[in-house]
Length: 263
Ligand code: KIV
Image (cartoon, rainbow, N blue to C red; front, side, top):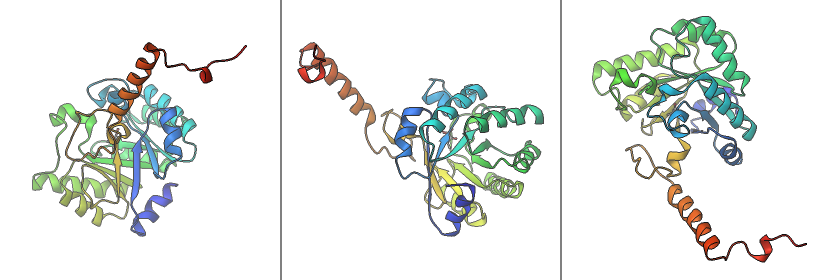
């Protein structure tokens, strides 16, 4: 997969699949799957570091996780998230942040929103760095949005998101994440753009889907938003494997002779 394949997939009416990935060992597994591309998302601040939202992700965190994923998944297209405010501190600071993410193994950067950073996006694109946009629920603005809520329910807000999507395409973004917006709006945006849309909580009328790996694997069974399908109950599977190990150590059935070195 490379940046041109995103557009080709849309032209050929083929879906794009993306998953978040934050670390070396899950990258090694995903490298051996059919998923098209991996996102080192700033959601890692919640999933890997236990914060309540994504505003705690820093460039150093993102770069470290990008390096681990790029080592583990050398065959996958890697999207690196630009974290909270990293693209709002002026051109020079933004370009240093982009440099850090790209030199950590990403093949493009993802940036939330558009208002107020149009010129920055244009500059990044014209510097030879592909940019993936992100509209709808933009979690870095959680405090302004008042929570993780579905966006674009009112027609005025829908028009704004559609116009912003067109703007991002005009600025040179090669693809666009649409998060938590009504299916009809996501479908409408997808049909009006030539760049592919990748949805999370945006229904089936988009050009691709993205999920957080740990959500798909059921690592937090109590996290059950409407848009999520948990493909396995990873939490219970790991819990039961660990408890089986503890039980076998306690009842002395592990380790067996075959797990022991001879003289
Ligand atoms: O950080 C992230 O995981 C994301 C996805 C929700 C698209 O941006």
